[in-house]
Length: 353
Image 1 (cartoon, rainbow, N blue to C red):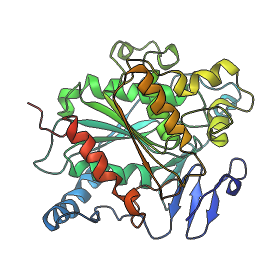
Image 2: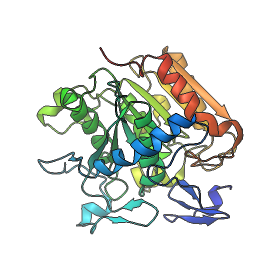
Image 3: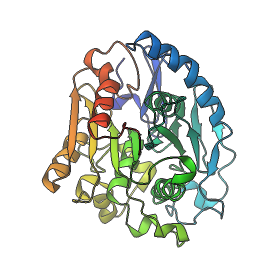
Image 4: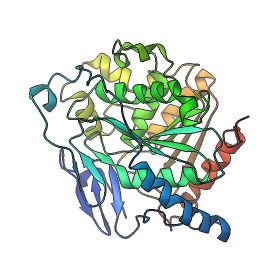
């Protein structure tokens, strides 16, 4: 299934052969895993454990929802954003798990499978072109995979283009601060908190890794005193640049508006914001991605290398944008195993002492 730029009229999703696309994330027909369904290529005992343990973890998570802003939403938003003109209406979720009109940012906690907790936490940022969230494909499915690895997941439901910048940045940084401040309660280590993001969610994850101390991410709350720097990043076919040459136009408009300040475009082109303090990063992208070209990940990788930040780039041949955990894409479908190896090599899957 291919998913090119010309399939997307402004502000709309599109239907492609064998599936459909919303925002900047593609959903292939018949490929979504059921809640608790096993991932292929696992040994039999591991598959059974995932099937039996994964579903309860997700269902329990429905009662583990943590509001990000109990004191009230920050007022900062894009000046021409819909929310600046009044209420955006009730949140909506379609049958495939696509969420829009988000005005109650939150974290949904997904516990590790029984007896495998290792103390690592990962905040998951689903993609969606900053117009909505592909919550099922790039939220729940990732949480199931990570649960089986012993990781405690926090699926982030963040504000998007209805609010615009800096709302998503504030949400992800508040999420990191909140998890770190309550690490003992969640039974995770405060120095093993990562962020994974897909597509525009990858831009948000990369924003957390580069703008974690920026004033735009602060609100004046006492939690601002807690470090918002993630300890590692995993960026899936991420939007990185806001420049029009290889950037994703829809994400830029939703986040920054029709005519953003050039200085803001430069800052939110995250290859420009990498420093030596940016955390170790794994980037995953494909040559066949025409919606968010692989040049996005290449530019970020080059910036990380120049800054001396440990980084790996997995550049695969096959798979259009939004590949998620889809099977049948050759070596591209093996990315979860490669990511697991990266996490294990960095000691992030070892049980915390």
